Structures are given as structure tokens and as C-alpha cells.
Length: 317
Image (tube, rainbow, N blue to C red):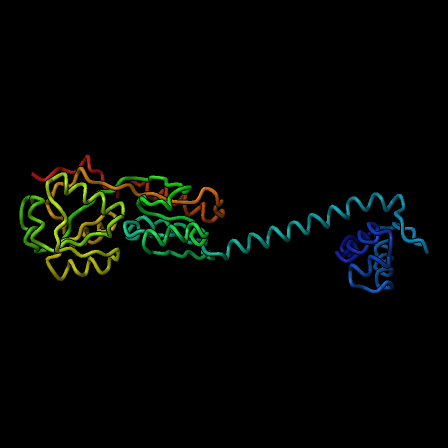
């Protein structure tokens, strides 16, 4: 018996005839002629060295050898078909991008580093980062268009049924251009910021509420001369070219502070921090690749050397 001469078509013909007890019906299912099926069966019997089917006008029945061979042949076909389907599914998952909703505070450090590690492991898998308003990100997560969201928690009725996993707490800072009048002081009272335009996030967002509570506790309200947006490139450019003060989570401005593009004003903001984490829909299982990227976000968030540790930062005197 030459195993290399037994092909898939031999097994398929044999199994179909055995299941239907009919060469005619098997030929119809396989889209072959009856002579072609009969020829294929003869080739198979020649290779295995024995008769597998008794064929007569009444149909086709398995011989004793055929019974033995049928169990193995049908199992082999099922295993091969299952293997092909699993490879196809894996290939499809590999080509589907992982889609992440991102808030501004994660775009400068957390997500770039996590995506870098992910792409090193999966160069053929796309990653799509969507930066939008909180409401739109939540709506897209609900519709299954986003695998998960990275950023602060969102206070919204739309959060019902979703899961927020806090990874760390990030500080909130007042930053401005180098040479800003307040940057030249050793310490700044919060009442001093109302003389300048203030860039803040939209009303209703978690970070905006955090800022408002902090200011009110200090007897200060957001001045009328404010600018609202959630677009950091706009905010940083505005702060750089004017006396506008930018209020932002540290993760969004850290790199600009480190490079000297912007400076942190000497205001004690130690009581003010905002959690950063991941929001997902527990009712929709993530793909293995999306789960892997989430694990990498957790790992990068756990690298304490870059996170803001308020306990080690001296308050302004």
C-alpha cells in the first residue's frame, strides 16, 4: 500500500458512498459522474489492498474491511476540515485590526508604548486608534466598533453595563508657555489664574468635574475667559503662542514639559488627580489579539518610573 497515492478525493468518495449506501447519490453530492466515483473507489481499494464496498443494483454496503476503514477515513476528513476552518478563522483574526478608543491623556505615552510592543509581536495585525469625544467613543464601543477604550472614567448613563478597570491615578496640572508671567513666580495662588485665559475640557467630562471641584474648594470659579476643547494639538499651540493656561492630565502634557515646550506652573495640585484605565463591554468577548493589547496596556501602566507619584512631589511653598 502506497499512502502517498491516497488523496482526499479518494476518502471523500468512499465516505459519501458509505454514508448514503449509493454511488448515484454520492456522485450527485460530490458533483461527479457515477463512472468517476466508481473509478475513484477502485483506485482506493487497490491502494489499501482489499474490497471496501459491496456494490450491486440495490446500492453499496460496507465490507468488514470497509467498516474498519470508514471509521478512520471519516475521522480524518473531519479533522482536516476542522483544521482548515481553524486556520481560516485565525487568519481572519490576524488581518482584522484591533480598534482602540483613546482619550488625550493616553496618546502621548501609555498607548504609543503599548502599541509598539504589540506591533513587535504582531507586525501583520493592524491597530486603529480612534480619538473622539467621550460620548462618541462610548457609542462606538456599544456598537462593537471599538474593542476597548483607554483613558479616564466617563460619568454617563451610557456607562451602564460597561466595565472600567482603573490602572493608575494621574495628576492634573496647570501648564503654560516658558516665560509666562506666572511661570516666573516661586508659587502661584489659584486666584491668580483668573487674569488669564484658561483652556479646559468640555463640561460634563470627568476631568472637567475634577477641575471644577478643585477650584471651588479653593474659593475660585472657572473664569469667563475660558476656551473649551478636547483637542490637545490645538491647546498646546494656543498655550505656546499666548498667555493661555492649559489645565490637563499630566499624561497628556508630560512630554511637552520634559522637552521644555511647556512648563508646569508652581501651583499645588496635589489634591487633584484623575484615574486612568480601560473601559470595555463585558458582554462582548474580546478577540485574543485585543486581549493581548489590553494586557500590554496594563504592563506599560505598571511601569512606575513614568507615572506621576504625588506622594513624592513637594507642594509649592
